[in-house]
Image (cartoon, rainbow, N blue to C red; front, side):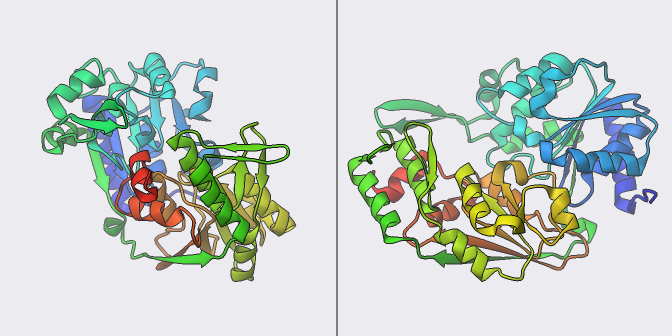
Length: 407
């Protein structure tokens, strides 16, 4: 099959080439399913690149290689995941970075962003993201900082923050910390606007309605008792293992785990405590081809235990068979399409607002008019609290947790 660009992809490709030629940095802020991968590969071809490095998430590598074969451009390409960046020593003349918002950490850059800058800061770059600044406009700095051609000439985030951020003081217990999240987008926008091309699903002709449904599941009485006991005593000792929640962070994490029926002990061992959610999912969605998203590794073991051969973790097998698929939120929220699924099912919920919004779009295609997304929440669990926060574009922070649980 030969690639045939949609009219808007051709228009964006031509405009993107102009931006890349002028600034050596192009940011394609195109919403999911609008074809930003193919568009970026096409721009690289128009740019007359010879050897391209494409960085993405591990589960998206095959999809990008398939797009490259479909386009059949004149250049060669190396497609790897971010975590493999240190293994690559080839010489490239263009770098494309998928899900680029992952470089938006602040006030300090993450490890991969620092290595990326060290190796490729001198090269022309194309950045891709459907959600460039999902939680704060302060996420903009390090996304451009990795390039020598950044529109910001500040050497680090702290110097940049003096010009663009309303720094606030937050009190965490006895500690006092600076909050750098309140960046002034009115000042930032005119500086980054020439580098960014935005495109929405609505402009592409998508008319998809995402229907979210929250389903409540009764857990075993012992599960809710364990949460209550841990909150009161901060430690639960068994014959062989110990659950310790001697800090607010650990208490938040343990309650999160137990609410969906699993636990990681102080020893590092983990265990399924309650199969109620898996049993609920298997019964409620019988006859449906579903994509299940989980948070903790032990949740996958719980799913495998009951679903057995009806479940896979591989996208190719999911697409080619009647099996359901289980994906972890962080690895499955970006860069892949689950259009073969009848619906998405969230076994748990992640603290990140970014994860929430990306997860919602995993089913979207131009041909699909309605997506069904189901959240499975434990009655008496933490999930409802997390859901309220992420829906309002706020990650479920320790401060919110403390207020919710009166700590």
